[in-house]
Length: 444
Image (cartoon, rainbow, N blue to C red; front, side, top):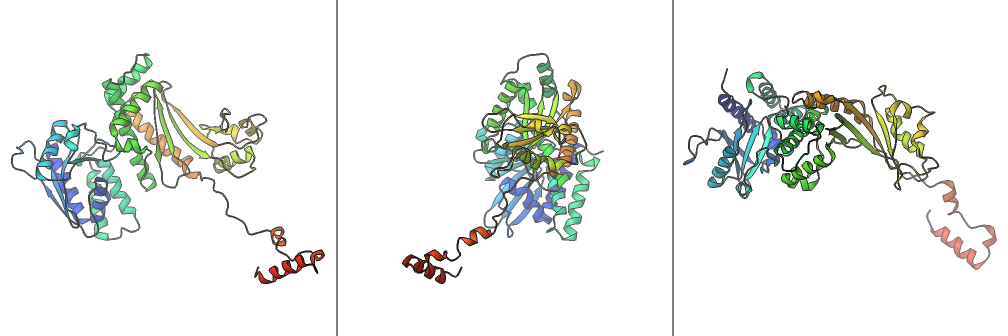
């Protein structure tokens, strides 16, 4: 059995060799790190690089150098198995990169990051003023490789073979790449404290750790969903959070303390809406949902607008779904279990009494009861979340289409009559002569 350091060397050398041999794969990954890797760029990769004065303990696993219209270079550090990046190590590589005039440090490991710029290790901000810091999970690289293999434009048989071999190696037991995710002890402690009515503080390390677990779980789910649907899915994130991970962490911690829930959504290309996901620490549930805007057609009746959504899932046979309808003008939302909502005789219960306006949106929600044991399970909760997310997408999300206004219609006969010659009573008059002349000159 190879040591973890030897496995890191092997994984790094294989990955960088594939980068060099398959520019499309290198481009798909490194573009997220700001690398200027255009069609004419020349990419060179090196392993186990050493620099003067860096010492034996600071030898990065690799170096990527790009030349072309613009030069760019990044140090690479990888971790496999249970090895994790440390603050001292990452900051040391940032110092080396600065000394050497490199542009970035890229780390790769089993930890997840919502975006490559959201590094799982919190470093001194001064260290990243001149050198950028990025992180990729091994699973995200596997997903990029698999999506590229399935791409219609990726047809070179030798490159396909090499990429398949990379995936096969990274998914093997010998590589030390974990395919799943495990929540930390902080998650378990926060769940227990919520059910003991113990207060949560915004500076509490266990709460921060639990929220960080949530962020990693969301990234893991987005990768798993990407692999399932063969397109890149991602977490829905406001721009302010994408630009400032510290703000995202602080505001999410505050929201968890206030609501005792962790909430987010996944964006799937061309889906009718975002796949909403939340974990309620107090109710011990996972909630999955999607909200569809109701048709905006003028004069449409409330039931017709609701049926636009329900008719798309009329063949759904389960009973673990609830239909929520949002109404305009501060009218309270209404809801029914799916079996009642699909019943012609009971569907009208979704419509408020004497209300004629159409709804603003229809939401479909599934609630999965966990119990405290499953909720605080470091291994169990991620597996349940993955299975239920894929099941909800398969049964509900992929079957829904958004409403779109119909195209304009050709003028009716009534409109055509408006352009017909004027009635006979105008004939013989000056006005009649003018109107007749206009109609003769008009080619319509």
